Image (cartoon, rainbow, N blue to C red):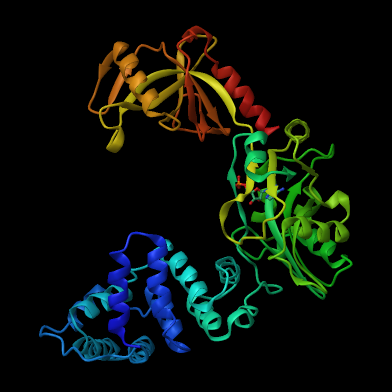
Length: 513
Ligand code: AMP
């Protein structure tokens, strides 16, 4: 296949708005490729090169760009790849000149559109996440495989090119080689927030509810006597957590991958705060002393690979959890409840909070393990705390919110002086109707203004949800709210009844306890 076909395809995909039509166009072209060509089309379409980065910048491209009209030859993709491979390999004295010459030789042979495409490709300007999804679905269509199957394999393929080549060349059999491998970490599956237990049940139906503990995510791989422990960022922390390694060596399965949370517990069994657990992960020296002072334990919730079965990622969660329960004793698994009953789940949530944990995770029993994605198969339930705070000022909105007072400066009441003390700002959670209402109300309370901000008499109270209180040098109380969001205006509540700085400080202390 020639480069011009790919350039033409890109233009047609850009000019099409419906996703299914885009996928059909790409599938049609992919279906006409074979072997190495399939790989190149999939990579070029998603803005990648098999060489990775060729190390060519804008200046070299400009210097190599021919002035005259294109010869307009048909240049096969394999030829483009051969030239770029040579360019990428150039080293040493005179290499800049040789790169430029090789690139010019290629650019001279392609037309205007091809030159632009190659320049963007070399500069990494084509790359967008959305393209990956389109090409993956097109690969499935061209290969006659279910899109979900190709997506699943894609989590473990080195790149989209190899995935496309295997799927089109060898179908299901070709995909089988892309799966979880022992001792290689996979990107962890992530959760989206849900408002409450009922919302989670509505989305998932009967679900697994598990304690959500505030520790550090760990992925533990064991292959015989070799054990590796990886963090959420896929960093290898094996040497920092010897107790987890020893524990994994004692498991009755020699080949296994488990996911869980590592947590430092206090003597009374309650969790230490997140920062304390993280101290263990930050420490690479004197690990033995750190271990004595702050012992860690892993609490597991998923099993991704098991001796005898191989990778389990494609299995429904209910089945992975069964494998986990057969392998890991109950005191090393996170507490779990399978239920479709809102009241039962709410009771479980209350128990998790009482025990000092963050909340619950609600998980679909049917879902496979979807590496690296924040989808709706896992929902996190962290009860947001709320405070009634006083609006001290508001900033004019921009973009869609132009003309409305949007970002609110929020304060709590100092119980001693009676004066409001600022704790942060937020524009989150405000609907159009709320923006309209508060603009009118706040302008009526105006005491002065500058270019961005209208200052007001501290009279309007708003109910604000937030996740934690954190230390902040920026605000006068030394405290600020994290992830603050306006829930509603409280015109019914006088400022004298708003929450106090002392309450906020007590929340902060409780968090640290
Ligand atoms: P967040 O960091 O708030 O997006 O929540 C996701 C994180 O919660 C995961 O990466 C885990 O580190 C942690 N977590 C705690 N308990 C669980 C659980 N039962 N299942 C999955 N993740 C959990």
